[in-house]
Image 1 (cartoon, rainbow, N blue to C red):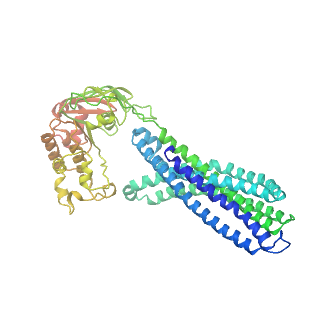
Image 2 (spheres, rainbow, N blue to C red):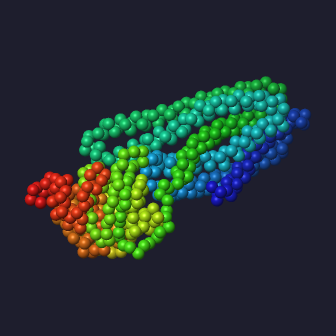
Image 3 (cartoon, rainbow, N blue to C red):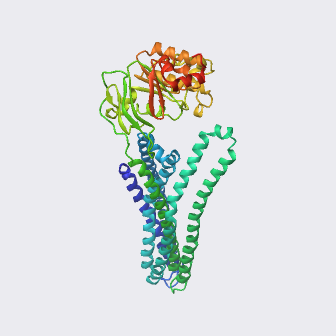
Length: 558
């Protein structure tokens, strides 16, 4: 924020100019009425020259005040927009450093709300504070000062009314303030449901759950609206009460024996005071809501990444992975997902991992690129503890392809190029993707629609595999990444990988026997433990779990 202090200072100075012009106007009007029109200081003889002179002066002051107001808006927006831009970028940058557990803790909907709505509220807080605080204080106390100069009796009347107005404001803000935090939390829920339902729209339609989701969203939205209405009702009560107090004050002013010009000026100052008070209410409302939002944004900005960077950038080894006494459980759970794992994977080796759903296969491979950290034990990559690596250096060594392919709304070529620099077409050929890409009207320049809706599951997987191949990483991890491919295409893919990426260590998580038969070694997991390691033939002869899987998929002929 400090970078843009000059804009804020200039905006404040222009606001001082605008308000001073507003405060001078009633005094000039008082002189025009009493001396120019009624001639109270000249035995009832008016002075048309004074009317013209002061009238022209008023017009010039109004024009100058308008210029100051316009420039104030320019510099307020320059400070507010730039500060909001900085905070938004810093938030996003920090979110990119969060570990998966930290993202899960906040929730996608909450993070979206914080980076959008909450930062907008903070931005409004800054803009309203720079503009509103100067204007409100000057209008409020300036109007009172000029009224005392104009007529001390009228000044005392206004001063007596002021505590009642402040008391009404304070009561309303006290009642509304706790609701702002509740409002933002409910907005998190609404955004979270929206995000879930849009991402899972196919499943909602497949299960015919549209009505249920409509009711769930409606209930969350009703709670949000209910809280908003509570806030609005509180402030709807306040405005008429403050207005009534001001009108009573004006009525009392009419009872004071004074000149018409003084009465007109007093009413104008009272109206300006009312505007200042109401603006003060809106300012405090904006400050209250902005402060709640700022605390939520600050939580994102000040959250330190759980995964601390090491200093190791590179090693002499190539593609070696080792798990030594590794155990892991997810945050908030006491049950170990994997327990006491010991496994060494050699450079260039193809390792397959099999096991029943929930046995810990994905959890195990997620420890290699440090998506999560082991609770106990050590994971080594090229002989170095992964915790000692610089995270970027570690992840440059590893290419990961997930079962759920993540594609972006750019061209197919750009999606593949995320892997790095190289021959995109060659990577696509290895991934068995070139044929279907080339058959498209736009070829590699075909734009992928949101979440890859214009591609089939197998096509998305092959584009993701091509992206991983282009990375030329030491370690290739396929987490059930060929589940949507037919057996022939899958076999051609693995043959091409062996031919073009012989030095890369390949770790394949799969459910199909056909996907793992040619692996150098197959790791069989059950209940978070490794129960057997060996070739297809060895496991079929010695591991009952593996044998049962074979029989269930291929039959007794395997």
